[in-house]
Amino acid sequence: MKIEYIKPFVRAAVSVLEEFAVAEVLPGDVTLAGQTHNGTGMVVMIGITGRLSGWVTFDMSSETAAAIASAMTRAPSTQDQSHIQSAIAELGNMISGRAVSGLAKEGYKIDITPPVAISGSRIGMTDPENPPVCWVAPLDTEHGKITLNLALKEA
Amino acid sequence: MAEQERLPTKPDGTKYRILIVDDAHFMIKTLDKMITDLGADVIDTALDGNEAVEKYKFHMPGIDLVTLDITMPIKNGIEALKEIRALDPKARCVMVSAMGTDDNVKEAILLGAKHFIAKPFKQDKVYEVLKLILSRPV
Image (tube, each protein chain N blue to C red):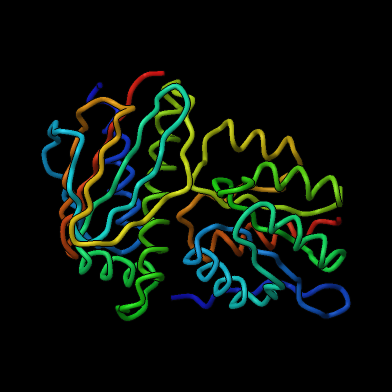
């Protein structure tokens, strides 16, 4: 799995988050990790289909999710989990949509599935249909850390 | 900050009526507030393409414009666009999507969409596009 695939996702994450007034986003080093990962707080998962297939996830703590949802709506922080999940799922959708648009310009005809947001304290995920490793990119924001995980294979 | 301009009213003085279609409650709320603040009426909302077609049929001919997301469960926005345009060839649909690839934009325009707004967007963009589309003759 080429490291080039994750770059449009990192660029899209930084630009979309900054457009939503998450003032500064600092991407960390991209690393390769085992595909089975354990999320904490909230995980948004989006499937990728077409010439490249797999998935992307965005993991963050409950506090980070609530703070980012609040920044996105320019409203005080809320405890309404369905509102936070909807906002963070849409954030993942916008980041993935922009990244896929970037990959399309490089000749990759791909599509994304609607996002799924999951909340919990120990969220374990495994996908036997995809490579056993994924690229991991940490993004530090003023509201806390977001971890982007990407597993893709060429169809 | 400059005050946001408002959309014009229809020739009979009533507000334009808009159907918002998006699978994300967050996006429906965001667009609803923007459109209402711009001076149009959000007549209804739908969470997937099937619901969009049903609601369009229900309100016909009372909808002046539809905002359509593309990536949605059950029936996506492109399929819903086809069905709405088959029901009403004069339907004014604006795609509002994070999937702003050239292929998606071209396909939607070829199927009769009037414009494309890429997510995320600001209220100025929504105003600019809605004003442009609503000011054209049907």
